[in-house]
Structures are given as structure tokens and as C-alpha cells.
Image: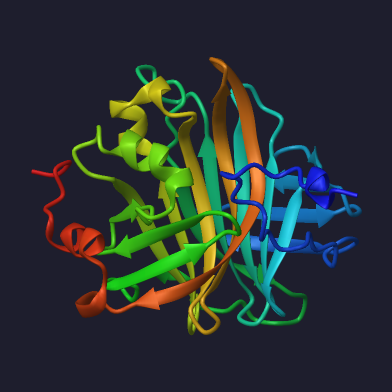
Length: 290
């Protein structure tokens, strides 16, 4: 029997090392007190459905939510709202510190670039009856600046260069012939810089969020991935990441919704001993900024 026929992944699939979906939150309810002044409730009905409620709004139910664990007390939860155009809520639920970070992403807000996504971030705490609310919060950080990490997703590897707090750079090892199509496509860009945020969740654990915005503005339909926004929980203690992607994939010119979990293991590279194709990206200026 040729077992390779059972492999349904393509060579460009970043979901090969995706973590198993976690169903531990099924049956639980969380009340979030967000810093924008809004109370927010998530009720995990079962393994597939979650009910979400903004303060003052009627409850709504999202089916087939994604949930994965970063460590024993940190969860990544993602679901679509069922709106048109599409919208997504992503939560980092930190039970150790009773804190939460919410990411809202909507497709279609930009009239000129209908696939472009601009994520919005909000911080808050988890209310528990009889306990005072924590006053600390997850927050934006520059801790990761200067790190270079080679991430392995299974059959695909990328190199992330975290050179500043607001942007990152990505490249693919040139010896990996299967992914030269990505390097060739990005060579049409002034540089592979994309906007990012880094948020500290706890010691050694960070939310890294990026949006394929410059690629969408410059290349558009030349790339199959149309302004996807990706949220990674990166654990630098084990150099592992779990994440979710949300956006649009065009296949044979037809737009397809994208919403998936992925995962990777990483290797931290030293700048002084990094290959030349990486060193060049360390010193090049960001052409998208004045």
C-alpha cells in the first residue's frame, strides 16, 4: 500500500504541524471586562459551538470555533461571526493571570482594497465571582526585537526577522526549491516588510500578529493569499508557535474563505552567523516608511 496517497497536505500547507484542537473549554463561560468599557461573555456550548455576547446586545452563536492550547493555562480561540463581509474574533485566554487579549478582524472595510484587513486589539481581564479584577494587562512590547527565527511547519520553512516592533520581514530558505515561487513573487515587492504587533502574554510567551497588507496593495491577485491576518502565540521557552490564519485565498481566480489553525517548531538564529540572504535583510531600510 502506498501510504503517501493518504497525505492530503500540499507542499505549501502550513497546517501540517497544527496543534490538536482543544475541547477543554466546552461547557465553560467566561466574562471578560474589556478596557474599551464593554463587558463581553463567551459561553462554550459544546465542542463545536460558542455563544458570544457584547454588553447590551443579544447573544449570537458561532459554529465550528477553533481552539488550541499554547501551554496548560493559555488558549487561542478563533471563530467567524457569520457576518457579510466576513469578520473574526480571536482571543488569547490567559487563565494563569486571569487576562484576555481580543483581536477583531474584518474583511472589506477598505473600499480600494476589498480584501485588506486591519486588525484591532483590545485588552481586558477575566471576572470571577468573589475575586477582585486584576489590574495588570497583556501589553505591547519590544522584547522580540533583534530575534531571527527559522520556523518549520512540516514540509515548509520560513525565516522571520523581527527587526522592529511595528514590522517584520519574511523569507524562505533559497535551497528549498519548492518555495522559490514565494521568493520570486516577493522579489516584485520593494521589500517583504509587513505590519505587525508584539504583545506580551506572560514571561517567554508572546502574541505575534501580522497582516499581509503591503503584499496586497502592491501585488494583489498575483499572490493567492489576499491580505491574510495571522495571529501566532509564540513560546520562546520551547521555541514553538501555534496560530490561526483568517482572510481570503484565491484559487483559479475564485476567492475562497480562509480560517485555519497552524503550528511550527523553531530555531533561533544568531545574526552574526546567519546566512548572507538573511544578513542583507537585517540592514536594508524599510522602503514603505519615509
